[in-house]
Image (tube, rainbow, N blue to C red; front, side, top):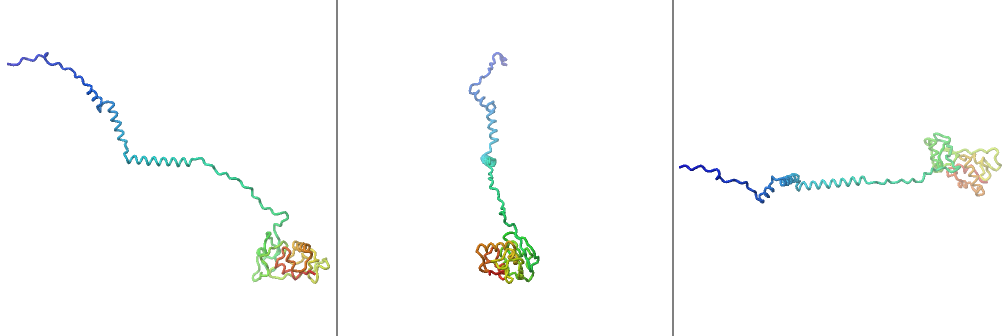
Length: 243
């Protein structure tokens, strides 16, 4: 015999279950919850940008380079003090003394290429005068000339010839010329100026020397006159006398 149908009112009543607090905490800490999901995302970003030990070393090296470059640029851009130039005393141009000759004029004659007057600076020597005259002619011996002697203004330099004996000067003093020789102790400026190689300047020096030493005692005293060297003395010694 079949069982009678069940009474629907006898079925058990289903009630919603209430989760315990521990279950609620587990749900809150689940990875899918809000705060937990944010922490997990942050850790994933950190793991993505983690350079590792080699990367850290590379970053440190780059930082050192940056610091060095910055220090160098700071050193280059530091303020500098330009050196101050202190002007020295103005240059003083040498000015010739009053009355000092700026050049000497010498007559060069004899066996030279260009005989005549030559202009030389003060302190020039016989060699300079010979060069200014074009030099001696071929085959001429200049050993008799003292090439190292300083020349004087107005003198005559004869190359390769013997200067002629001067004739007596008209109007000279009675004792100025004796037998064709000029007396150094009685001659006047015009008498001495007629001697070869003796111009007005050198003639005046002879007179000044004669006055300073009270006359010439020997022809060799001509060596004491400024401007008369060995070569000039050799030219004059046979043309003058002292008594």
